[in-house]
Length: 135
Image 1: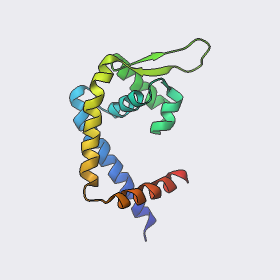
Image 2: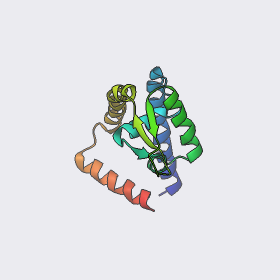
Image 3: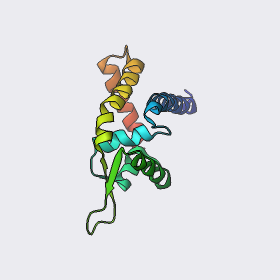
């Protein structure tokens, strides 16, 4: 078994998914993975930038630029609470309005790719990926 080939395949799957989602989300002005950050902020209202970095696994500088763009586009807002060191991130009304469409794009892509897999297959796959992610 070629372990490198396995990881290359995982990377290829991830890049293909991101490319497709970026293409589909570009009609909303969301390119360069902006859709991903908006989805996670809606799903985790009040998340800090530090926690979002951990969730999406990007560096702070990349995320900071992306959040600035999302704020300028009117999809999110941030709030620095008294005595707190980190801003909390919230979707705007515009971001909340767009969320169902973005979530459906993501769901459709995933459903198409996983069509034909049994529940047992998917459960086994998730367990294996979790083991890889923990190491």
